[in-house]
Length: 68
Ligand SMILES: [Cu+2]
Image (cartoon, rainbow, N blue to C red; front, side, top):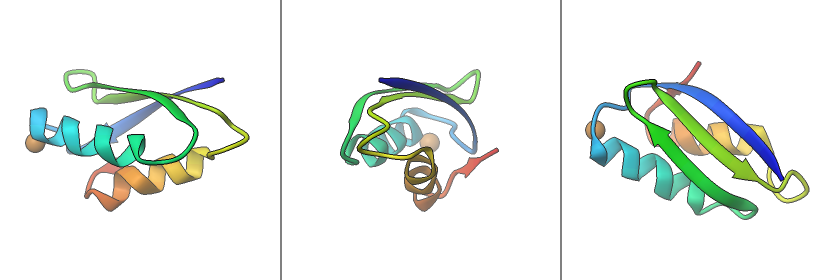
């Protein structure tokens, strides 16, 4: 299990938090998704044999947020 901490710009409220959680959580191989709005981070636990960091970033960006 890998832990990934991403810096994400543009998340401002619970609505954003839920969009990111749902989008990332819908991928295979994701164990948990945590959003910290004040620190602008998304922490993801994933199985690296099922999903890549690139896929996680793409899922977040598809929702309109920027992974920096
Ligand atoms: Cu929002």
